[in-house]
Image 1: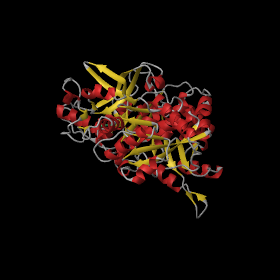
Image 2 (image 1 turned 180 degrees about the vertical axis):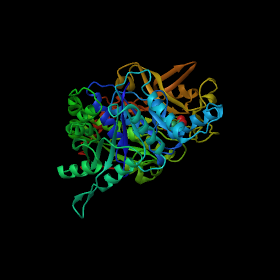
Image 3 (image 1 turned 135 degrees about the vertical axis):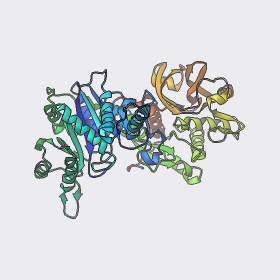
Length: 548
Ligand code: GLN
């Protein structure tokens, strides 16, 4: 049976609970322990797939095709523990399942209640993560903030689990805020005391506190928190702001958080080793030799979390190329103007990410045209690839009205369309293509040069595809289909590129979901390498300040 760590958050949201959880996972994995990470989300949506990025940030897609919370991206980036549909549980799924059972008559005439029916279902989902697998530790992160109405059933469920399993098999870690009040020049512990108080009211006494803070916690402040919150002094852990999020596991290790966890959970202590992480990831991230500027042309640019995995994948590529990547977020609705194009002339590479709906499309197409005509390294992802296809059809093949049927159903040139509209295939499509699919690469292409292998697997989240009816026309004009998926009569374009351009590559899949700081994704790595080449050739000194 695995040991359990339940991670809660208090005072305010956005303290970085996902990164803290992933970092603890990393810390334990470094000792040779097998960990699983899970996120419990208290909202009623069944999954975040239907939520706007403005509400929720990025939807992270797993190999098994689950549309999940972006914290699962952190779990996979920090650890080697793969995640899937069992690793993200929402209140929507819990209620859906309980109500379905009730309709089926499973409760035999009983009254169905939050306790025990909803809480039992939650406990079942927590146990399901490790069923049939050999995990040493399961970390379950509970979304929301202590005191929220909707997280109550989840907190009650984990309270019961701790009661049933005993303190040596299940512990609570609470992430809290210790604000610095400038006028008083003091760190304040009261919000933490109140937050722990809220948990105690519902029967949860945290074992370990992770204290988010701008300043170092003095011994005195630590002692005060320990006393008022009823935790051991060594279990008050400082979680200071750091320059790179990948420093967090090192910061926790320096304070012996792993030792404390092992002691509480009765796990024989092993030192563990984060040396590689320190030298190959953190040091390189903090002290790069060069700088490179990449524009992300999207419609959700003002939102920090909408392109989370893309930002991280660019950082990983920066680490691999010994360069700091400055990301310029360019609003695709503004690119059509001269000023928008002006922004693009100040970067070394252009990335067009995924998205849904017509808004911002023309600007993306314009940015792609700029990259193609000016030989600027370009990476297109999902909708970004579809826009590259439309751009080529309009401006190279001369089909001025070319479009995706997502934006214009009646277009004379549906270069991007639904599979069923393409007639050749009837048994695929219609619904979203989700999760991992194999792809074969053509030799002597940029894609092959990047991956160094013929067979790859990447994750998808889209409905529309390149329309193969136009294939030969495109190919004749220097458009290369370098990656294809072949199955049941379907032959889908998965990667496209351009001949005679230094590096213009776009994929129908989402490479960003498989990039890790110590294993950068080949397409991102090459994209940034080519952007650096462009920068060097222009002798551009690069900006001194980050462009954001
Ligand atoms: N809207 C496009 C489709 O459904 C692209 C989706 C995406 O970029 N994730 O095919």
